[in-house]
Image 1 (cartoon, helix red, strand yellow):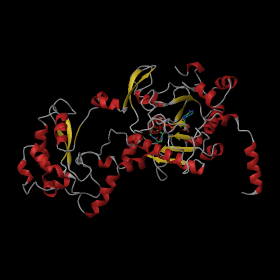
Image 2 (cartoon, rainbow, N blue to C red; image 1 turned 30 degrees about the horizontal axis):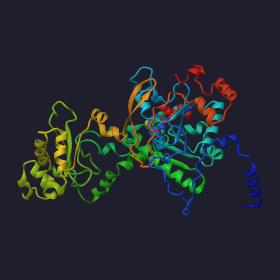
Image 3 (cartoon, rainbow, N blue to C red; image 1 turned 45 degrees about the vertical axis):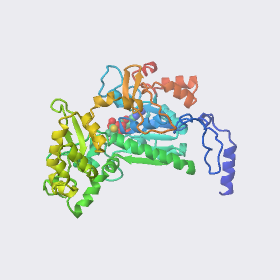
Image 4 (tube, rainbow, N blue to C red; image 1 turned 180 degrees about the vertical axis):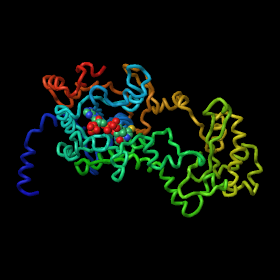
Length: 475
Ligand code: COA
């Protein structure tokens, strides 16, 4: 380092830390072992805090993809401060509303365990508050339309100047390229990421799936990127940008279909039922209905009560090693040695008939009875569970995958807890915040504004909707 710069940095080091910096939560000073890690904790499992304790997140997300990421990080212990526009906040608060005057389930199920502050990010005073937040946080997460963050003045360069340790994580619809400026929602991503063209039945149109692989799927990818960037920061001391494009996230989840695209060059896809039916393949990976994606043929079969219950079905896999057990169960023991049925390749052209025969058997039982019998013989089957059944499933409640929380305006509701189970980090699943519920608290405790400052901020209009007084904010 040049002498001049060293002098400068020495002088900087002598400078008393600004009040605002002192406010950061103290990290526990653990005894360090030879390998640089703290000595293994002797506290009981779950008694040594949460995985992301001490990580503070400036959550600038809205709708689904971003909020699902920050909610997961909050479950793992991160302190998440959700910044919302005064007046309305995240648009989903009012979307698909089921209880009059209360935040929708769309919002509450994606924003648990967070705190909410309202800030008009385009107001000069609002920008000042945001700059302070940038200095006090480790990660900024956003999923605005391309360019929106820059238009607020929060360019990466500006953020990095204020806080070189800041990780700036973004979800966008597309990565750099012809579509990078497009706004994107879930189903657009499912289509652009290759999922829709490979979902549905061969003789029908492309289909989107109910699982939110574009939004929540990309939120998951982003969460992984953030945790990796936090880990790298331990070595480098600096933040970085993390970008997840929804198209990329969907493609990652649909990678087996890109696998099949390349296999097409070398011949037909024999595990697709269209092969067995003698239907020629085209130039692209086709839709495969309910075919199993792996090498073991599978299909969805009716069970007892299917006439009235739309979910009385089971997914049945004719896994080769248990073919003998399947034959015995369905009353076709002769198929075990019949040269037309005995081996997987000879069964391929007969799969439709085989599944029809198995279905005659599954239709005599409920999906749960089929599962119970098949499991005894290691035959892989899965009941088609309705959301009603999932909501009522006791085991999902006891593992914390489905959690009931209480909300001041809407009452009790179910949310999805942390699907990632950490043995030493108990999940922190709490209700979602009301709009601006923690504005005062954050201004005071995180940003060290005085009562006088806060009064001035309130009268400036930076944290309240233009037509509403400050106290109406959390209503
Ligand atoms: N104060 C003041 N203005 C605010 C604000 C605040 N606290 N929060 C947001 N805004 C402004 C933004 O600055 C932006 O203004 P600008 O266009 O003048 O720059 C405006 O609100 C709208 O933001 P935008 O992100 O464009 O919202 P939208 O409703 O028009 O579009 C999406 C929604 C989801 C389509 C878009 O945000 C998007 O494509 N995001 C990336 C992909 C994504 O995550 N999609 C999945 C969503 S589930």
